[in-house]
Image (cartoon, rainbow, N blue to C red; front, side, top):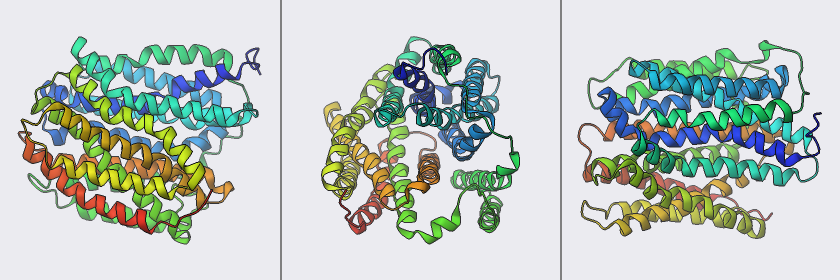
Amino acid sequence: MTRFSSKPWLLVVTIGLGTLLNPLNSSMISVAVTRLQHEFDLTFADASWLISIFYIASAAAQPVMGKLSDMFGPKRLFLTGLVLVAATSLLAPFSPRFQWLLVYRALQAIGSSTLFPSGMTMIRTSITKGQGKALGTIAVFASTSAASGPSIAGFLIDWWDWPAIFLINLPFIILSFVLAIFVLPKKGQGKAELSRIDFIGMGLFTTGTVCLILFFLSLTNEIKWWALPAALAALTVFYSYEKRQKEPFIDLVSLKSNVPVTWIYIQFMTINLIYYCYFFGLPTFLQQVRHYSGKETGLIMLAMAGVGVMISPVAGRWIDQNGSKPPLLSGAVTLFIGTALLLTLHETSPLWGLLIIMAVLGVSNGFNKISMQTALYDHVKPEETGSASGLFQTSRYYGSILSTCLLGIVFTGHMDIQHLHSIAGICLIFCLFVLVLAVRHPRLRK
């Protein structure tokens, strides 16, 4: 241990500064999409790849980073992740073409995906007293950065331009890197066994997902018919291959044997599909239809993201007292109400009306995020917590990916209120599905 070992709060801050990079960069892009459409002459479907590629790379990287942390040591992996995010953040503003920007976004996602699992490993092995508080503080770093991402991006784009949303990472990276050298413990390095990494499973999963997105996004133009059978073939082979692996990329056998957990993953994926349709779609609506600036859009988005952060502690206390089902139902109901209210919105609707709708959606997110995670842990054994948490994150990423597909299909050409109503109408059907699953969820007292 270092001479800072007597200051666990410094370890938490160091890790927190790193772990906030993934949620921050996943949310800042929402306000930058309109500007990037103009910069690279893109349709919304094209620009939506900036969102999708980040989640695809994160979904593929997150489940294996824990194993890499065991092999190479969590401190080494943490520092490597920071360097990769720094390099991509410096290179992205100079992208000569849109394709290069996509590459940098994917590498940025992979780099930032190393930080959470390696950071959690160091906290769990270095902090024994007050570990729950430490983990809660890391969660605050993540949720606050995700919620404030659109507002930060709005101010940066208004002050300078879209490159600023990449360069803003550097102060966090530099501070975390310098602290990490002196603060993070040097232990936990094991034997490098790359055979434990299911690269074939990762490749099949990524191939199937990318082909599926290509097919969905081509529905409004020249349909890529080859992409659908390619996606189904890759995912079918993925399913067959994963069932035979000792350490699979995704443990499909466990999913099949634990049906309640499988439904929880499906429900959480659907919730994120709906939520991210609004999280990424509303900034486009605010800028292209209501003609708000990037800064104004970022501030308005706080009504949704910020309320979700404030509701989370309330949901946590409610769960402690009554279990996960009451806030789970509340999250489903408020998600349905907020989506239905969006259908009443028009071009001339007052801003306060939109803010109320966004706040309702934020309340829903605050309830759903905590209650879904608690519901998951109600149905898994303690020794399965790590793998269950990894799949929980993967289901969130997949819901986010599907939301960008839906937005790309609907938001073609000129954005208007009818497009927003189309999204809300489709999401209302998904809301009914979420509500049915919430009602069917068994009530378990904590």
